[in-house]
Amino acid sequence: MDQIKDQLAKELSQAASLEEVEKIRIQYMGKKGSITNLSKTVNFGAMGPEERKDFGRRFNEIKTWADQALAQAQARLRQGGGAAGPMPVDLTLPGARGSLGSLHPITLVQMELEQIFQGMSFIVGQGYHVESEHYNFDALNIPGDHPAREMQDTFWLTNGMLMRTHTSANQVRMIEAHGVPLRAIFPGRCFRYEAVDASHENTFYQLEGLMVDRNVTISHLIAVMKALLSQVFHRPVTVRLRPGYFPFVEPGFELDCQCLICEGVGCKTCKQSGWIELLPCGMIHPRVLEAGGVDPDQWSGFAFGLGLTRLAMMKFGVPEIRLFNSGDLRFLEQFPAAV
Image (cartoon, rainbow, N blue to C red):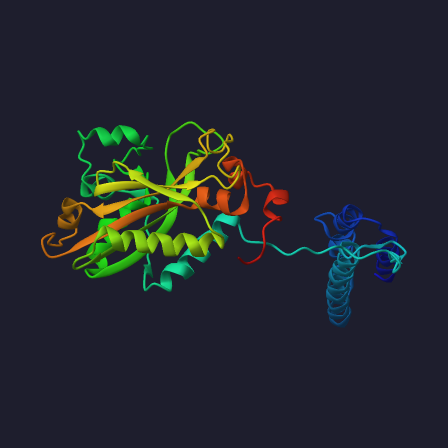
């Protein structure tokens, strides 16, 4: 046993890799290993009771010692030590450079908008990526035969559900959950099966909002939108309000922002028009209020949908929408940790 122990210790001290240690373990502790087979090479019949007891004690001791020696050799090699001991460390070498993570630019814009709207007593709600046809279309005055459904290329699921095409799908949900009067926003991700270009993606982010109260008018809508944009861009911006059609508002408007990439001259982001469609809005359609259990003769309100992705493009001067989903850390590292 002493010879086996000395030989095992010598071989482990010379082992230079975990693979070598594993071979040594099999050689000594495997089914046919030197230590395992010790009991098979002894004539127990020629031993007295005390000799057999002493052999059993020493056999258990060498097995325990071998297990510990193998574990120590494995630990040494995992920590970078070689056969002759730990590897030398050059203390003059520069240390590994650490880096801090950063928030996505769309997340930065969303956090800023939430702060702005909370300052105007709006609550922040959440919606669902997978939505029902009722909340995404029917409750928003878009029945199955409505031509407006052709405006939104929808990802339909095999169970009859769909990937929501707009955060407007949460309008009736919020009214049902909180009742009226209500001021609420609900940011989130949307999905549409459409061609991808410099200003369009098949997955993008919006922020929907609504305000329902007694005697709400278009003047309230314009006041809130002006307060919003003046705080978002931290600079004067040129906007225009033009008629727009959305089945869930009446009347409906398109609030366009002069392209901040080209300052209105024309570029590929604004398709050479000098304007970016930024904020569809309007007065909530009476049928939408009725779908939420609200009497449109007693209550009125406005709704708006803000494109977070396009707003981030304008705010940070990003000319290509596909960069946001590229996963390129070089792109993401350019943005500040806070806005």
